[in-house]
Length: 303
Ligand code: CP
Ligand code: NVA
Image 1: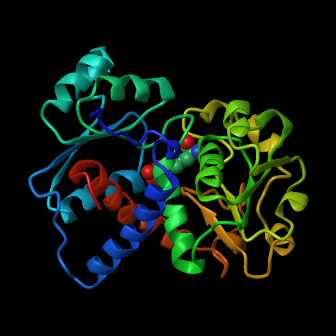
Image 2: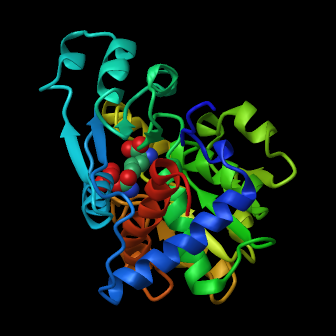
């Protein structure tokens, strides 16, 4: 049987994703009740970070420990990958010694190359194209607060980036409607949109997109690797800030999410992210619980 990886939300079925959500909530309850749950005793996760991280690193590392295993942080500065050892050779060697690999990298093709050469499950910890682990946490948060997201209306405001692409995949898998408000030159990938066209509508006006939405989501205007475009992006995105005017267009009890890190006063106003509709802290914490469910599913092979 071929190795199961998690490069995209589209790698799992809708039923598998829903089962993961329920297991994540269960795993969280056990942790809060101090009930040990160690299905990964003796297992090791290698974590390769070619970009910075707070949440992804801490959640995978804590998660593996809590599940009875161990996580190993590998910086390209310290391993031979950073000195030009081919990704395929690195994958072959590392996967012969560990039970899973998580990688945060730039081009999605690097992740695909690594997974093709790995004999153990590979997890996408963010690429320029997708950030599926964040969506597990976002969906878990919605499930906890509101129940199943099927049929809800979600509005994405801002860049058509890795997070936006993952929301498009989530809309398809979890069957919700996704409105996307973004500047003309920063629209999401057309193939990713086309694959979910029945659930996605692209707008150029934030207020129109946010109308009657159940959830408003945004992310930074310049992602990791786009630091040089910061100034130009600040101008292009000035009409795409989530502020109280935007929240007022949405349903009265709409939620607000942001994967973090956030820039208050840029993509989101401080009174929104720190306001009562915001669930960003629960969302961030759920990275831990959702990924523990994911690790158990991929490494132990069942949940
Ligand atoms: N949301 C997220 O992935 O955060 P980090 O970059 O801190 O891992
Ligand atoms: N779009 C952002 C997400 C960070 C978690 C980035 O890629 O930098």
